[in-house]
Length: 279
Length: 293
Image (cartoon, rainbow over all chains, first blue to last red):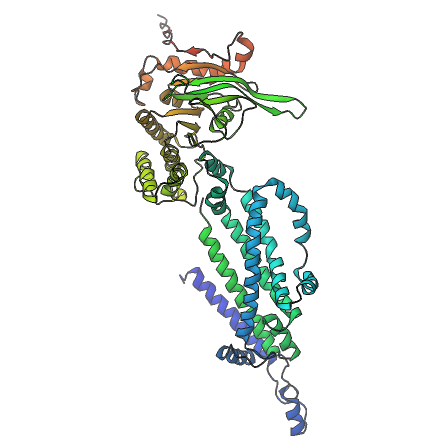
């Protein structure tokens, strides 16, 4: 067998999936008839009581439900019944909005901290204290001051996406090789041009790594934030379906949260590769 | 301002605070004139402050005392008049060969159009023999080629003086030889005023018009300025056959081996302001013992 590593890895991956789905199916299927009961009572109780079927949905149930969602992802039948596509759309919009606000602040501020040892020392204690705060701890304060649940969710995304970008930008800017700075100095390149032509390209891989960490954290936090603020979004969807006791939908939501998170991460990974330079 | 003192180092010193209090002087009261179009080489042991002198000339470092005058003006910080060729080439790895040279060109002539910048950069890429590699990135180049880009970048801004900090020391012997040949050709063609640091005695003899000998630090001084007696048209292949070659070489090696350590203690009345200019004489005739009959 001279298959390439990727082909062999793909075969193993698919095998894992098949084993997992088969195990899941066997563990949740019905085990035949249960106790004798009147047909009317049996209809009332459903397959869980009559055939000993697990209350946990099997892969076929999930697949069927998933197909329904894929067929009409954008339906809107009132506040508690929206298509999963709409809910994802709300979540992605909030994440992007909060994230872009964080980018707009973190990168210039990171440059300032990285280029000025004074600002670095002066701002360090604030960053050290603010960084470890769970973003959700800001939620009551945000709700109280902003008085709008949607904006508060965006604020929470902003605050959680800020720190990795800020710290990575400051570090990347401060760690630009002295000799590159000296090249710019001997060529009398001014501060602004130096920031854009030397420091930014040199620090870009580190900055993009920070942005990639941030988008991951933002996507983690949005689910929890939407569970708190409610109304719309994939986090709200998960909690609403739990209240509906639709475990099938909860499982589907978990799956799509993972997929979207992966896509966001891969987009940033691609950007990182674009700005990375070999030495 | 005269061509005799195109560049003039006037009484510079560099001192660092001492951990036990007080200050340690790396060097003190350094005076050195350089002519326009002259190739000067400074040679001395590690730690004598050669690189600091070069960084002060470049404007990247400041002397604790004294000043450097270039073309009648005291230097204040780095300037496009003085190009630096770094030991580690210091190319920007995200830019191509053309991009690196063009960066320097567009820094000097900010209002130039893109074609003008490219034409000027191309001229110097051709000069260092890198035609055809314009679109390669530094990571795709060998060490020698990278240093050629560094040379092209320095020359492309037509500086009043070029400063080189052991530019060839990281290269293998063959590449170093080729690049020294190119450097000599370029300097003769363009009449570039050049100041170079080296550890390599033969490199100094081949390239330099004046070789400045620096004693060991701390408290280093310039001991002598050697005038290179070899002809301008010297060639690498027969340089060692020249009658003055060994005299000069032995003089430098003697200095590096013993006199650089003891110079400051043994030589009295050394005039730092007018460093003696020496022209090494012919070597003494070698003594050949007649085989015992």
